[in-house]
Structure formats: C-alpha cells, structure tokens
Image (cartoon, rainbow, N blue to C red; front, side, top):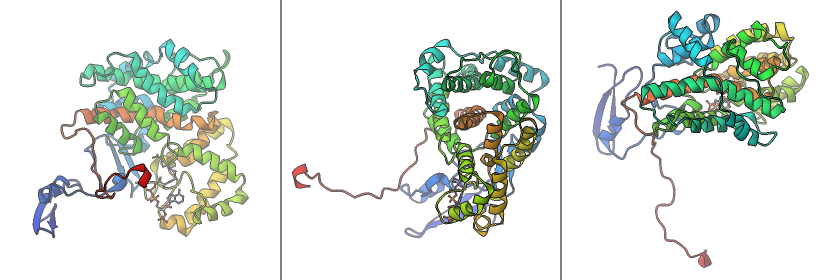
Length: 422
Ligand code: CMC
C-alpha cells in the first residue's frame, strides 16, 4: 500500500488512513480520531494552508518558477508587466493581450490629487516611506466606491489594475515628499520601470533613464513579484479571507513585508555593510555573528537550503548596473562576507546562503535609492503576487475565513481577586 498515511490515536486505539497527494495529506483526518485534536505548528513550518498554482519553489534545489516558467528565463526574456500578466492570469499573454495590458496599466497610473495634497502632505517630514506606502495603499481604496465588490470579477479586475498601476506612483510620491521635491506625474510614453525611475529622480528637463538601469529595475521587479506563501502573502490571504477589499489587504501584506526579517532585510544589509566599514573588519563581524552578537543579514532562508536562485541573478545584474553607475564601495565588503561565510562551518552546517536581499540593496543604492526606500521597492512588484493570491483564494471553494486554533497553556480557572487582596 502506498501514498497513504495511517495515524493511530493510542489513547483510544482508533486508526485513520488518509491519502497523500503531492506530499500533502489533509489534517482534517485527525478530527475523525478526535474532534478536539489539533496539530501544534507554530510559524506553519509543516502546514500547507492552501493549494496554489501560482509559484513553485523547491528550496533544496534552488528552483523558483512562476506558473511553471523558471525565474531565470523570465529574468532573461520577459518584462515585469508581462510577468505580472502571467502571475495574474496563469499564462503568458499574446501580443494583443500584452499590448492591451500595458496600455491599461499605463493609463491607470494617475492618483487622485487629494491623495497627495491632503493625505501624503499630512505626514511628518521624516516619515519612513514604507509607513507612508502602507497607509497610502489602504487610503487609496477609499477613493473607489466599487473597491469592496470583490466577488464581481470585472470589479476585482479593475481594482487589481488600479493597484498594479498606481503603486509605483504612490511609492515615488512618498519619496518626493520625504525629499521636499515636487511630485512628477506619470509619463505614458515610458515603460513601467522607466516611468517609476522618472517619477523618482527627474529634476529638470534633461533627465533620461539609462536603458541598462531601467532593465535592471525590471529584472528586480520580476524577481520580487511572487514567492508563494511567505509572511506577507500569508497576511494577504488571511486578511482577504475575511473578504476585505484588495487595498486594505495589500496594505496588510505590505505591513508584514516591512519587518526586518522579511522585506526589511535589504535595508538591514546595507546598514550592516556600512557598519562593518572595511574588509578588514569582516572576520571579526563573522565571529560576532557566530557568538550571537548579530545576524548576518541577507543570509539564510526558511525555504532555500542550498541557494536562492534570485540571489544568483541579482549578483549578475549588480555587475551590469555598476558598469553604468560605478562600483558600489560596499560591494567588496559583501563579497568578502559571502566568501568568508560560505567557507565557515557555522553557516555551512545551518545551510545559510545569500538570499535575494544580500545584493539587491547594493543595486538599489547604486541606482540612487535611499536605504529607507528599499522595502518599498520590494512591495511594488510583490503587489502583483499578493493580488494573484487574493484572486486564487477568492475562487477556492476549500477556503473559509482564516481562523487557526490555539493550544491554551494558561491558568485553568480561578476566582477574581478584589484589588485590596492582591
Ligand atoms: N545569521 C546568523 N545565523 C542565522 C541566520 C543569519 N542570517 N539565519 C539563521 N541563522 C541561524 C539561526 O540562529 C539558527 O541557529 P541555531 O540552529 O543555532 O539556533 C539556524 O541558523 C536556523 O535559523 P532559523 O532562525 O531557525 O531559520 P528560519 O527559517 O526561522 O529563519 C530567516 C529564516 C530568513 C528569518 C533567517 O535566516 C534570518 O533571520 N535571516 C536574516 C534576515 C534576512 O536576510 N531575511 C530575508 C529573507 S529573504 C527575503 C524574504 O523572503 O523576505
């Protein structure tokens, strides 16, 4: 007998046998043994909370595919908007479909004037751009009275289009505000990546985006577009399961991404490299990490235990960018850290390798982005992945509102003690 699992409850002697499909069995079988039996799985290390056909990830072998297509092929041949279409619709677009999608996205990039004048202008002058981005994505939904019509496919498609088109505008708007610079309107003649760089950095009339840098931006967006059930996507699914609107759910997912263990790591990497300061300090820093004084940011991954395929592509892209911008002086420290860590027993034993964030921050810095914009740069493309997961969740008949159970470990029962007797 194969592809089944038999579980015996030794308290009652009851047994249940359930099929294993694709390495997964339904934990509902446990409830047949005892309706009050639950699996204790903090941080969902062994739980598949959904079935998904969007992204395939094999951490042992360093494989990442969107809708079956290897990330390496997409990074080489595709554009971000084409990849976004693939993630959201399941297949690569035809030439006509791509042209329409690009046109539609390009023609939804504008933001209501009140968003800038009354909402963004209300922030304190040194507000973190990610805090602004999180708030602004939620606020954006209040401008659309159809935002909540998530079970009307046309309406949901419209909200998805709006979000994909407008998140770069929001991001650039937050940056320009933090710099005290005038807002640059979207330019319909530019590609998605070019338009974003233009809205970020244009000062005067002679600014033009370098094609190598625009392509690097596009590649970084492709690499960050989805990564199956990570912390941010799980937040997206949990909030969406309550049937919240896509703007609110995106804001929640972006909030999870903001954490330094998740999308905040690229910012932490550059800060770490700056603190290390010189190559000579690398051995002492590595010793400190091994002693538990610090983490080697940009290293390690919950799922990748061999290499992160995104890191390989990003390292190559970094060199292409540095050809144009000149080398980021922190690169040598990063290379020395990588070399030292990959030879060290501590990191080898724990299967800790550079992840997507180890080199991406160096590229962002070379492109001119301040460190506190880095997580926003992750959130822009990831919005596509989040929305693809929201769509999938809403059409999945197995899904309900998320509501995990707990293992209660508190006091059983006791009487209220009046304050004078405590
Ligand atoms: N530096 C030093 N030690 C580490 C690191 C690190 N970056 N990452 C893991 N370890 C150690 C950890 O202390 C533990 O050691 P021990 O077994 O002695 O207790 C062991 O390796 C296993 O680590 P873990 O914390 O159980 O692994 P996890 O799967 O829970 O955490 C992680 C994954 C990404 C949160 C963690 O590796 C980490 O904090 N890395 C640094 C932050 C980072 O770069 N995050 C970006 C992740 S990729 C982008 C994204 O998807 O968001």
